[in-house]
Image (tube, rainbow, N blue to C red):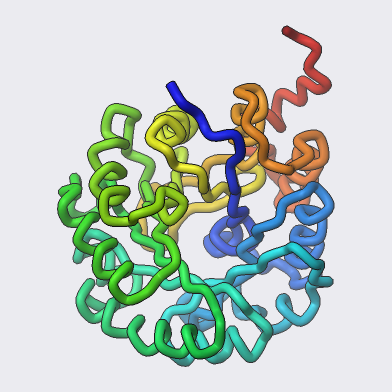
Length: 304
């Protein structure tokens, strides 16, 4: 088994982790979360979304968040954009990395963005053209890669087709989402391998795993063995999806980092500091951390 020496973690807590919260979250708290994550060594932090406030009211302060971040050299702050207007708003706010989002199932795409898959991809074309001219990188999210809350199982061929069209448009990478957390390790290769075949470089494929049924870490391990070196994760396991009934949070960043470090895989993240962030944000949200490592707080670990 060949494992990578290093993994890139894209922290999605400030965006994906907070977008489904029922209570209003102060802008200052979001900015503090980002700053604490930076202090813990996280270098890719999905800061916010430039989606309509009517659709995602929790992220209505996207401009204020971007303006309030103390940006540092070597850091990256990607943001989500739904269309060309959202793209231009994001760039005006200082974004240098944006993400577009579609899905591998028609029903979820309709529920999530009120469009067909074809229409969603058509919306992205002018974004990619503008980004190319602006020197902005564009990532493509593909939700429901292993299962849809409305349609059930999703064919790997459908995932491959959507990813191929995103690559043709010019995205730098695709992130495959187990949006409702139904995948098990034996199913990861069925979806990932066909996408790797068209990606040319495994660094252009990421996994975005939800832990709804407790299989996210095992699925991440399977992805590592397939050559995946980029994973999305959310500190304290924050998250969910407003358009996926029953979907719970993302894989907890601290759980993923714990597993990677124990396997000798570098991330550049200070795990102890990350656990502090997890416990802090959970306390701010009046709950216990959803991840295992922060709840256990078995640190330092002296075992061999």
